Length: 377
Image 1: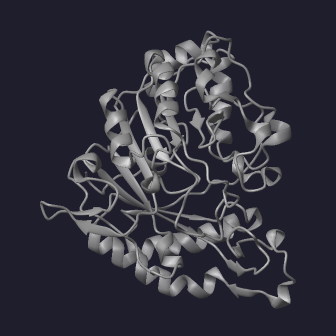
Image 2: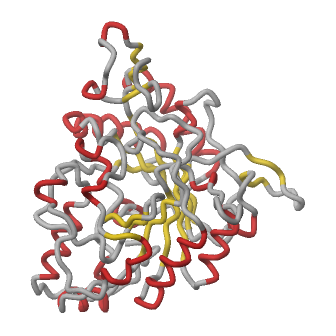
């Protein structure tokens, strides 16, 4: 895939711009009926990293059973589901079914067998050479990796002791992307999750007793490292974004990151600006439901960004149990949560505003071209 893509925000992030490609789903929405297009599956909340900025730092060790995933997808596929994003409050490469003991390769293979496209968001893991000499992550076979439409690798390894990003030999039919979150690191010995946080509001220890690594002090080295990985692996894109939890610093840090993108390669690196704001209503969970590792469905994956969620997928944002997701689509569409009250941290306000307009009768223009990865709305 060419790196000369102008609208990387619209193509490689969920900003709502692909919704109009799904005219039937939009027509259904106008008529009060929801249609699933893509779903996130957070297969577990296990992770080998302890990112200071992690929005799901409060982990409970949840892992979905393969049987639960099958029950969930068996309801959505007949309704029109086209794609699955394997992600998590953790690293999907660490997935292992607690019941059957099968791993991420088997999960990918199963999802693909349903005729669904697959995207994966991961921070990677140590690699090995398989029997054919191909460099792969230890838990994901080359065959399964080649089933992915795209993979986005979080470059969080640069903030950990390995100080590197594990990049396997991605097949030519799979789009490779990188992502890095620019943030401060406060080493807080009293934090029970990671021992570090990324905002002053999360500090427990008095600040005078906290070791602080400021983002701006790390930026020169990070710029060199990010440029090395872009030059070496030639990804289709590198997404740069500031820590969403430091709301007051988002605009300024986006300016800093744009300078970084210009140094690295502005044809590949782009800055995602997504300041949070509570939408009037919440409809995103109809075309894009999220199955969390506790087997509950959520309206999006940004509910964790709300302060009252306490860095986890919390009960007030639950839509339904995964085993009953089909019932969601049997009933007339409605705002899935009280977004004005619950969702000041929403980063999908633009998309929800668009979907609300469709619910209220707005006609949707028919795109003249098929976008890249159209099913990942």
